[in-house]
Image (tube, rainbow, N blue to C red; front, side, top):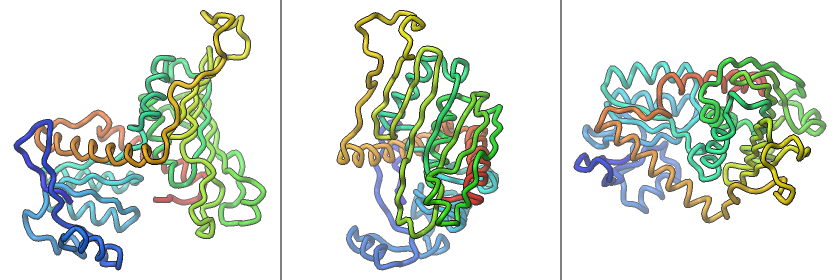
Length: 317
């Protein structure tokens, strides 16, 4: 949790004022390391302890903590994914308490994602797209849908159905098929959405792919191999059909290269810092950022739930 200095409009002074956790050995060690109080529940927070809080806890526990913080008039930056049911409650809480609430969609803010979105817009977006191919896993389905919301502006009309069912709880089936698949349309664009077939605990966090997107256009295909890059543009293989392509032009080239691991870690930390500042700006100005509009958050959550249920029979947060 961070205390907000309202003296600045563009630059903010943050002071870490406490850690809210169950009291595990890790959270106790962290509180001791930074000489911070460790709170076991929202009710333990003294009045005026914090202006904003970062809730990096998923599931029902995270939902409950976020809602109780909002009721205390503490602005909340909440980790995704979040269900539409939770969002409706959060909206009522922050409006009645005159607080504010953001979902942290950090994968749309990476250099590669920004390049992908810029190139998609330049190519014509949903109006020009002829197909979409998306690959991820149970944990990244939400952020994939979030990326598509930025790429297309509107996810409707959206209609998807299961193409294959391997039985996510069946280990044998997982060994035969690596991905569950849904297909249909997103933003009216013919789409195939693939997700890791198994979400069993014994997978030990193994993820074959995280954020892999390809959007096809009449002149070529735009591909983001991962949220850390690279992003590649590939022309159609028939040069005579490509307007303006010269004989010596490359058929495929990177728009941005992949980050190394250290840069990736620093980038994610910087994106989180910027997200906290955007939350502070809304607290001060009352102006809600476009990516945090209620209608957009609700649509992303609704489409994510639809895909997650079809692919895995449940949500994964």
